[in-house]
Length: 291
Image (cartoon, rainbow, N blue to C red; front, side, top):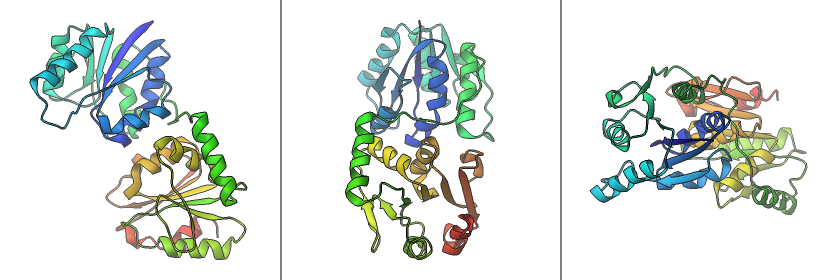
């Protein structure tokens, strides 16, 4: 079996966008390990295609010892190929020093130290953009839809919450934030027009609305998967992407500053866009739902 290592400096949303890439790499077949920032490690509880998760603080002022430790991680894994998801002169140089035979990354700073340079296509849907990297290790596979695997414990926890709150028959899940001001109005109008379909809020309370408070990303993904519909704004991009990954119908509220290419082309995803996020009215949201 081959062994691949992926150095991924991105935030949690970018990690999720890489899941289809890990899936394809694992089907080589190969063991796939990753090096990510400590803050995003919990998200990998949803990714069965990664065997080991190493940590490195890409954004911090790392000491020489930490840099050498990362070099040791790359060397000691006896990897057949290493993939760098973002151009970096220092990280590409480190990979060259590691002696790994195949070093893959996008064109940009440090590409002279790589053996396979992939031309970036930033206009693509992000999972497809990152998936182009698999060509650097000789794989010709289509990018499969964004997906996660829900741990059984998280599903059980979510089902218990739904039973306790009387949500077994389905529910609309709102994901409130401070960037969009009309959450209370949306909740009130939904309750008025569809009184038989409960409305719940994720993470923070709304007046007269049930609140669901998961303690980790696995529980949160299970709640999103159990919903009939999720309404979320660009201010909660990771939750928006998780909703797409669990295949729950989604209304995504976007400003003009957020490109639609960040969302999959799917009948399950309804994007609503205005010049400013606050310009999207509750009436437009309900009209998108056919109400």
